[in-house]
Amino acid sequence: MEDAIIPNDRQRLYVIGDIHGRLDLLDRVITAICRDVEEHGSQALTITLGDYIDRGPSSRGVLDRLHANPFPTRYIALKGNHEVLLESFLADSMVGEQWRRLGGLETMHSYGVPVSGLMLGKNYKEARDRLRDAMPAEHMSFLQSLRTSHTHGRYFLCHAGVRPGVPLEQQSDEDLLWIRDEFLN
Image (cartoon, rainbow, N blue to C red; front, side, top):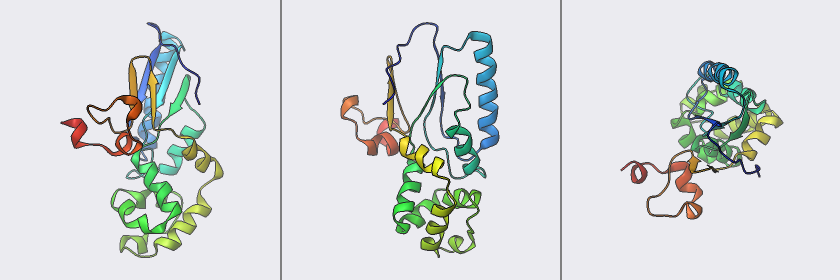
């Protein structure tokens, strides 16, 4: 568990959400954070809010970059619902159709897994086995290390949102990762 971080007036907090396989955009954000830290000092924390994979072309590259902590600050990585789907698919290929609809093909392609059969809704078990073989242990370790929330001073951070009326310490992982309408409305 990460040590408690005592926020103060001089500490900067960089929060990055939903990278979705866009290494190009992540690199631009990293560059901007590096410049800002040079100008304002390194007493800062970077928190990424999950959804590192799917949709964009470079899910593997994003996990490579984040696993290596490219930030000139302390860094905390949170889990998003797309990481949950990936972990579920690796455990049970029956989740493949749901993950495919939400961008899983792009992630598999970034690891060199053939996706032509998957585009037709076939070969999920074979694709799962190939993805397991293709994913570096460091990526698996990174994914397993992700937590669902972090409190920083008066800020509570998570991927999706919280259920209104429920104390923060009683929020379910399901809501922290998936809630939508109840939180937004």
